[in-house]
Image (tube, rainbow, N blue to C red):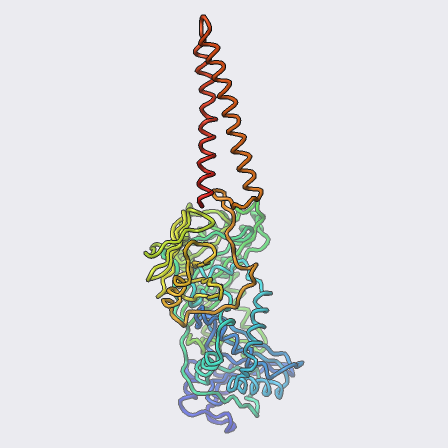
Length: 595
């Protein structure tokens, strides 16, 4: 198949700028994938066997483009755009990822045209009367979605922003307004921020993908919540997870396969510690990818799995990689190029590379790079993977392996009014002009107002602040002394408005109340009060009875011809602990009454 940017039906023709944008970086694909532009949208197409065709419309916008306060806005646009399509036997879907949104369809040519036209029509005029209903649908969807063992890894690496937002719920489904959603669609779902691909030998007739002009947004810059790597965190039993950030390269993709095979061999086949042991390589943006490795374990085997996991990585970093391991991984990847309908099979990958601005390689170029990978290349990637690693282990430290515990507390505190916890006398909330701090025996947790990713608000006065670094402080007026409405108003005035997320009122029984403290049981005649009263009287009675006995013994010995003063001293020494205990009980009781 030849590529011709000019010989197309007028509805598909592109002006010079759009045509060049579609062709940029794709010349190497001539004869495999054709490219043009449809209504200003770069389009790739290649034929596939079968009667049905598949099409995908990518937009360069996703979860990582949002803020914590607006999280879910892209997903909302996707749902609203698909609403008008209604019930259908057509196989279609929408998906919102970190760096892109995809509308996907498979069907006859006329069905694909109808779907794509409907998506773009929906994006041009979102059915805002459906907004609250779609918000509720998204919250229901999230409630039934399992997070998986690696759910918290993005939060710990990136914080409550950029690629870390995938660890959080979609807070925007509570407070987003129609104007916010409409503006997001108008600026992000544009013809200049999209790429189309179709498994066909031509662009179908009748397409109307008219969208507003805009700009191509680069993938979001990555943030960091880790002051040092390699680092580790504690996770749930049964799972060991590693993530790392690698420069995108053919060698890095080969290394992921080598690592997965090595973990499977070491932890399952030889050690018998794990059932699943695998690794994955996934592009994050134009220049970097995410390496994820995983192994499961029974509770009694977790130490062995952690040790084996670390040992496998150490072996690869040391360069102890057999040529056979490389050849096996390389052979697996080379087989992809023997697939039938290769052009159609690679369309999604090429379209995503074009969308993200990553260089596009022809099959010949890719195979040449695969064949050029050496064991030394893999050793260098292994070193990079370890240097940027974040390891989640089941509740135990791995400092012995050279990893640093990820920050568990903040390094700074704010000054302001202090409010003691009603549940724990060792915990204090500080509300200041610059932020809020929770002072705990383990260290402070601070959220500064100018670094607040989101603050949820409740009509009962509750405020939950989350910082860009992922640390959170909950301000519950019912759980701290002196958190008056004016203190809450001061917080509200200091947090940026765009970071505020109003939440619905809670049922009265859902508003937290102080739990009884061991050092401060509730008064009012409950079981705790009777227990303390009984203890007080029992200890006091014992002290009095023993004191009387000591007095009688002392008098008897004093009247004796040869008094045994050692015995007298002994019984009085036994009285002293009872006197001391009685004093402590009365003192504690008075303190509880004051509180």
